[in-house]
Length: 189
Image 1 (cartoon, rainbow, N blue to C red):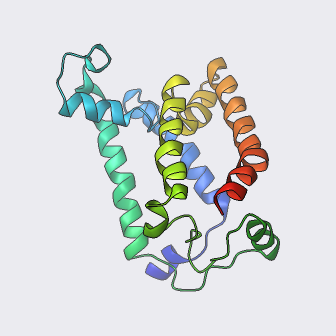
Image 2 (tube, rainbow, N blue to C red; image 1 turned 45 degrees about the vertical axis):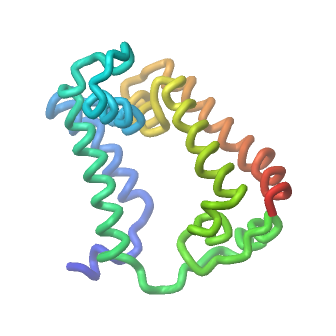
């Protein structure tokens, strides 16, 4: 059974399971898939200050906090129990493109040149994790949701704002990947 779970699965299996999440959540309680509002729920639960943004019935959305805890727990299990012991294979063309950006360590799942404890305390870490994280959080709240909320849930419900948000997310992602990231990497490496 463990061998069956740890084998490489076709991407369509995950896509199908994610797609089935939408009708399942709607059927079991008219819930919306999304994770970006979890920080608001956690803040409302932990800091009962007199702040208007946090004054709502967060208990109705408590299931979302359990969902986030389940995602975290699944990541921990995948990392420590179901991890793949084989060497990570990165396509030669991808390695070449990343090396042109200054990334040279392909020994792990994530490039250690960026994703390591040493990098966290550097200018790269400040830019990618602190400023980048803030911008992602601000953008998801400004857009009224993240990619999972708009692209998976919103488009499934034929929501016009979700279509606009999804197009903006994709355009921003392509622009950052092909225009912004090379400039940042040249400045930081």
